[in-house]
Length: 228
Image 1 (cartoon, rainbow, N blue to C red):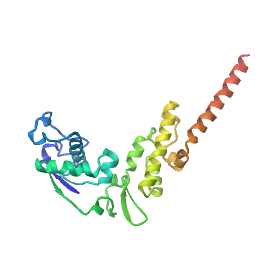
Image 2: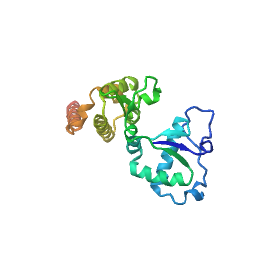
Image 3: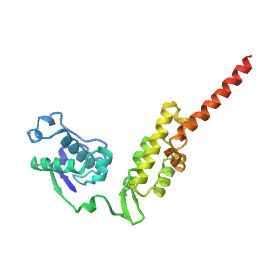
Image 4: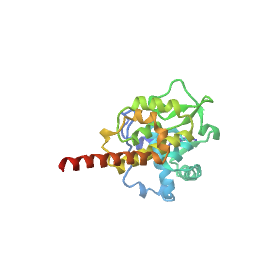
């Protein structure tokens, strides 16, 4: 689905910036009669469209349903329903492409470096949308990015594997958050990627905790012995 935001220039306040990290919305947008019929989900779709346009610095953007579902929890049905209302209010123009083009596309040899962190070519020569950058942003220690992303993209070739990696990362983060581990004592992101599958085992964190507890007991015992 290709969406063109009508009068995008009203939202694009920084035309001098190639990839601006924000866009402009008037504080009285909810009072605009054109949007009176919008439901909460419609507003979410509208905001998602504006975010994509801002990232691309373009009024026209290609909407990938897989990405919208993954990052914004917006289903294809919700997007299509909202689009009808946004079209009637003349907020957007829509060009619908064949459904197969919404999920996969042929990898381009000239690809933006930002997008390279979000797509990877699978074994069939097609591109699947995998937001590796989002994984790094969740990782608590911001070191080892380049090597880590390179390793991840060499191994992860499907949404199924990506979801497993994301699950392993969540378990890793939760474990160390509960243990209140300082980031400086965590491995680099690249090191985590080399052994991320270990964290798919629910016992991995508990085993580490058990070893740490034993160490603490030993240290406590030695300290008590020294006092005695």
